[in-house]
Length: 304
Image: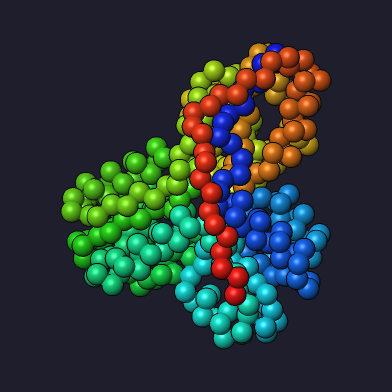
């Protein structure tokens, strides 16, 4: 049984997630219910369910929202088509898109106006990728792997590259290198955000010392899934869980050191029961493993 717990730092909420959650939290306290949100406000089932219990309604189409209602756009961003649809229904919109995602939208929009074809490195169908692609759908191609790049047809050699903000740092580097090999003059914007980069570095640091790594985060959370993959890439046994109930105690057998991290949409309240359980099982040393200190904060979005 383990005797030491390594806590990855940073872990859990990033500035963009805090901003989005604060917006919806304040609206639920101050405005008439229900409050609508376009897609899950962040990709964590516990956070989403807690908001749903308080009166938030999460929708996947604007048509589901009654005319004139209050709606929040999630941290992952939306396409211009969604903005137009909301305007047509006179919805009172608060845009909680992470500012770092908005930056990618602006880059894509400008690149399209400048005549570039856009290669968007990301996971097809992810909310963030859908929103970014929507800035210039006829000019944007989503690629995820070097294999995707190798299958591209070379038409317009004028390429502009942007990325989803929550990708694997290592995998994205490989994909971008493949793009450069095929399109040496491509303009590259690696948009993986500071929070993703820091959390991957931290989970790698604990994985290199631990016999087991547990990453807390939901299955639809890209950054949480990537954290588990990064930990596994070191050769250390690793699992992604939504919370304590997902953990099989047999994982701890013959393990001296456990590493614990969490995706950027995970509240500390989900880690606390895991830490308490490990103490009951014999952990007597908890060591923070700090790779970066985060002080970034984003101001609240305009209230419209």
